[in-house]
Length: 227
Image (cartoon, rainbow, N blue to C red; front, top):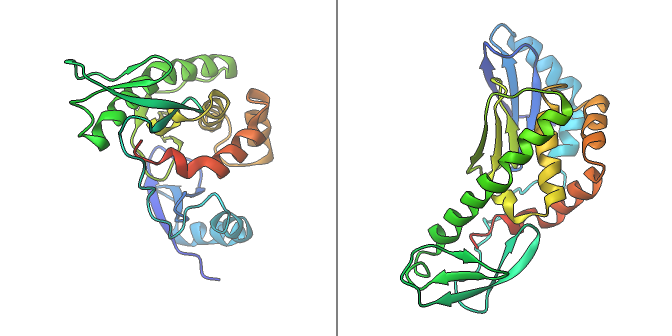
């Protein structure tokens, strides 16, 4: 089997690492000085691992983007792992409110893609970013900055500048899943590759790691729905 991959080089990187994205594309992160031959050798050495990852059920190969639900009364939307009823209300404000249900002003109901997304992103910044600070303190690591981003193929990432990026859609998942993704990215500051040591660090930080990974495999696509 030929392995197709793209290479991203950086002067900040000291090691060659391989990432399989959720769309099954293979990305090699490498230092500027790494030769094409050295990269090819490492990819070949990781052939079996790459094959397992690209054929894993969690990868979304050739699947359409989830269409989502309608923003109408009686429908429901996820927040922190639970479904809550959507209620369209006659309200002069343009802000969605949450009170054990989503209270959506009539003026927002026509903006299906933007209305809930804006609310989710605000809550993600409010609820997720402090947990990054807390976990970093517990792990004894320092990061550049933490950001909530709109990423199609990753739940999170740790950049070569030690920045932590987290997908806003995670705010729809249970807290233990959010904590797992945070721990996964912060652990890369201690171990850049997915070695046994890396997974031991993550599991020590989040004992529910296996349960969280299983939840993402089963429900990951639901998080990508617009509502």
